[in-house]
Image (cartoon, rainbow, N blue to C red; front, side):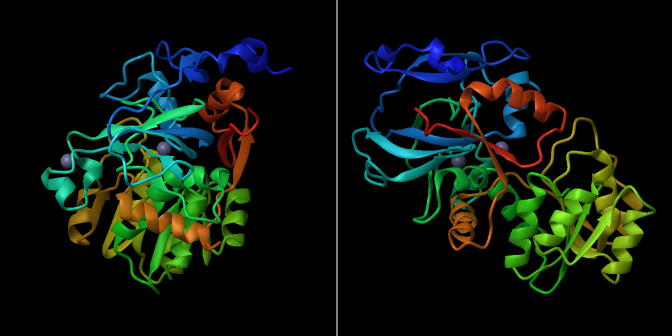
Length: 357
Ligand SMILES: [Zn+2]
Ligand SMILES: [Zn+2]
């Protein structure tokens, strides 16, 4: 008998309650409890969760690590995929039974200068799934149909889950390096984000150099198509990259949340190239000013992606060209999953499986 089935009576469904993992206090384990199933207001939908990926950001949310904090109690999770189960008045974009994802970019204003130029990710009125709005660590998710991800036919919920955050983040990050087909890109960090980045970069026609400190991850990077691998523990990794790419990579994508990787990434960037940061390590990043100025290097931050990026990122997966490594776990295992994430003890992307109940 699982912890959940012990905890929740069969009558729960009758009383319109759902299972949820809730942050009641920052820094404390999530509480598995009953929560009211949301009802959609005008312009809203409810999604019955099939699967929800677990992201490092969920851990930061639960710990209240970032300056803009969510307000407990709240339900984390921004990689929730499911079927539309209820529709509020006026909703025409989706219909009941559609498979959608409720991503980090939960909603935006649609009218500001950023929204008007397809940069809704930096809309000042943006809401964030599993952060400022309840997310996917629950049987049902209330969502804004204008901002859900539309999961293409042929792509399962479990496979899609990591793509609506980790997938779009790396795909957009590669795009904003502005590296073109045939040019070199460094993917620094070959783990949860990096293994997806390598695949996206290959289907975009780039030559890929994977950098990591783990030989096992580098061997996997080679299997995924990396043309060159560099172990950053040995020798001077920036020199190795410069040698292997004949002068440095045109684009560098830093997925590793490590200040050392940030510094090395700049040194691996070709003159006039772009180094893109998507990881958020704690602390300040000292910019090597001389190298950046003298080599005309661009350092750029990138944060998830817009709805068109989402459609593209999912389309590659539906075509079978990109596949996330996933490990399935039940919702009741969330605290042990968080503990493993904290210790860097998760090889693939963990996806919570809601198909059991
Ligand atoms: Zn995420
Ligand atoms: Zn806006």
